[in-house]
Length: 337
Image 1 (cartoon, helix red, strand yellow):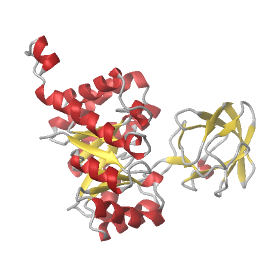
Image 2 (cartoon, rainbow, N blue to C red):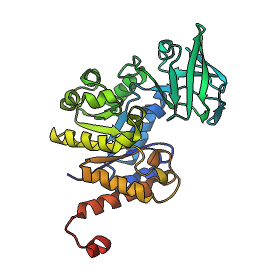
Image 3 (cartoon, one colour):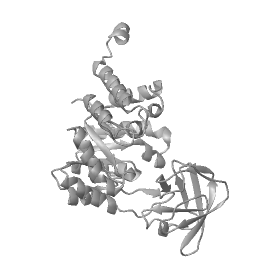
């Protein structure tokens, strides 16, 4: 089976020229990330992509994830030991106040809970509950913008699908979409909840990005068409030095059950800003293919990066070398052929 390339559509790629070039470069699936797309825009984004290409579109849910809501700017700095109000209702955030989505999250927070935002860019500790808001201390100072992923240092209750996910999936079905992705798949019940909306005749990708998802793989795999390892969010719960080995175990196990595996996060991170990857990134992509991954997912590289087309071309180049790989090749063949 040929390696599949999934490309996330965003401001850098939502135009005719780029989408047509990505299509010519063999992108298998165009991904719309609902975490970064307004519900009111979904229909228009789908129509726009469809007008440029026949490549299928996949709607990727927000899922059971906490995010901070809109901030006054994309560079809001929180100084150490300053106090921040966490409101239960949406507010425009700044260095003194903030709110989170889903809206029921803050009401589950307790004194001494630690909230880490945007991969530890900022850490808040809840000090007290004042009824309409919480007061938190800035434990680790940092700078954040709007809609950044957050995690709490204990398990809280989150629905598998947000209201926005449900409505977006319904729009997708009406538009003829047959590919859907469930973020933060924790268990079989999460998958069954999605199937109630999209049916059993659609292609469903379950994203494995939590410890619960990994531990429940045995019950998840028979219910889905593919899984996707999101190494970024998984590294919020699993220490980063364990991720390469956990990735190998997940791929090996899924392949033993004949379920294809896609891999995402930081594949060509450097190419968000420069036209070529680092040697470490190229090696990571190649190693992921050698592990048996069925597909590779570009996210920020194609959604907001400066070089979306070049990123896909680079993935293709690495895949071509992988397809020629032979451990018995001579050094000369490895260099020149």
